[in-house]
Image (cartoon, one colour):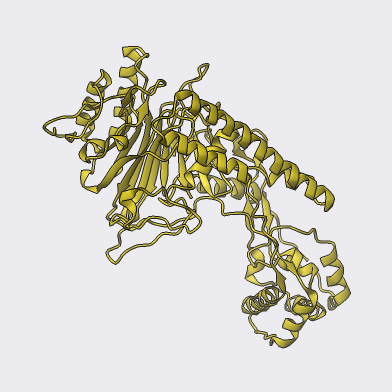
Length: 560
């Protein structure tokens, strides 16, 4: 599957400088992991932040919650994940508008699985995934996530994995290519830099080094880890279970060496993995195109005060126009003005799924991992305690939400949906020939073609002349009020953004204006052009999200 995404995942703000360079996302609610050298603001603030991390497993909801909570203290745009070990491919959007793109593990084995954590892709298998970022003027940036076989695998498996990666990279036509992940290859420190590597390696070399060097030469890639001199703690990305051996097996490769500003390991980023998070800063010489490809956060429906609405309706001047389309625009403009003046914002539930006890324990675990004197037993013990506390915290949150909903006599079904940490995103759709399409443009074309064929009739119908009759009876105000009462609440509005909840709270003046307009359109025997348009919501068959069913159309207030 392939999901096109902006660099910021439409989850945070983005700034550009005078020369059009991309600046990193700004989020006041996010804390950064500071080090001693970061006290002075970095000159590389205008960069794309890509990280790679072998998480060992995020198959359970608790592991995903811990990773998401830990990532809040880190500035990032994309984190490439290896060894996710999830059972099936999935795309989930968290409550923090982060996007989890998770690939399935190897069938029959608890091995593999790659994915991305995108700060608000194409998964090719349990060891390869591609995240394309589309830039202005047709330029694209691709991030390839790789998880290579370990030293226990056979030479045939290792050669096949690197060969598959080489074919994927040669077929990828992006201008900027970034290959990240766990290569299980150690590049030792070189006295003299080569064409594709720098002098700053780490650890003892292994047999996968030659495969990685061959890959770099065949695809014209540069090893970014080896070009920057770092302290020992910021160089190694893997530690053995007995804490006696450290190696740099997580690498960052690119075909544009000049775009790399920095590559290092973040010591403070710790979950339950024995790998460290590799951080890279990239400067792009183009302004990224901002497009909202993901579903926005849920809209909190406001409540309306009838008395305030009546005051706004009386004070406002209701204008009319001869053209029905323009006349309807004036009506909608004044209705929205009354809605804004009388709206009472709904209370946003800002309660966190993880309570203070769990957050404190997560901070303590980070301190234990930073302490070089801590033993493997201490790390394993506090990691297990974190898992237990997070599970209990999430369960308490769900129980509290259900209890409050039951006491308020609210919908328990809706309440069970709200505590979910993520929701599915449309990533693939089958066309008329049964082929899976992952391009966003192709998905839109398939939807438009499907619903056009579904609604359009191919049977010729002869026109019947309209019989002459007397003047149509007038629409009364009580008829409009009755039609409004019969409308279902909490339904999505049409293109005019006039919701059923607003109409149910409508004052007498607004009812009078609606009745007047309906009679005017009835006398003219024509309707405004806006009434011919609607918003369409895609509906899918159960257990087959790549096949569509009948649509749900949201129209304007003419449905009265």
